[in-house]
Length: 225
Image (cartoon, rainbow, N blue to C red; front, side, top):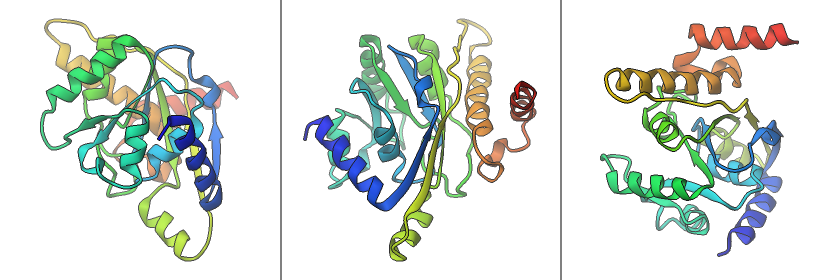
């Protein structure tokens, strides 16, 4: 299936089952960019494909979905890198870096898996590594309303779900070589997650809810009003 066809199908289905609000996607820079989003449910990828008007998408998808009738088709349409989430998948990482070197829009979830608490989990350092290695700017995106539980409940009741995707401001990450590199990646990961958290309602902020950095970002936004 061609990507344009898949995106048209996704947009049709999403408009039937949900009221999707897209905020700030005009902030996506032209050229290379790494879009980092929280991961609430199985529809997260569909929402991002719904919202993004670009075809140069680079996406890592869990290998368990490779033969899934819907998510497998989505992965094949965007020529996804199939990722083994339970092992250090260096082969997939090399493939991702090779594709990023050629350019495009990389879509990834720093948490690595869907949140069982329906709020932010601690981010993994893979996204910071990719951003530092590639030189791509990072665009934080906050998703709400895609929780599997809520989607299923609304479908059973023939109600449309309220889904929102909010893009923050793009920013750059620099990871120095040598000593201190691992701490720099951890700090960069926290920055990515805090910027996602700052775009989320409080109940979705999870482990970053009381972060001083999140509070500083929210205060900065308030001061700018």
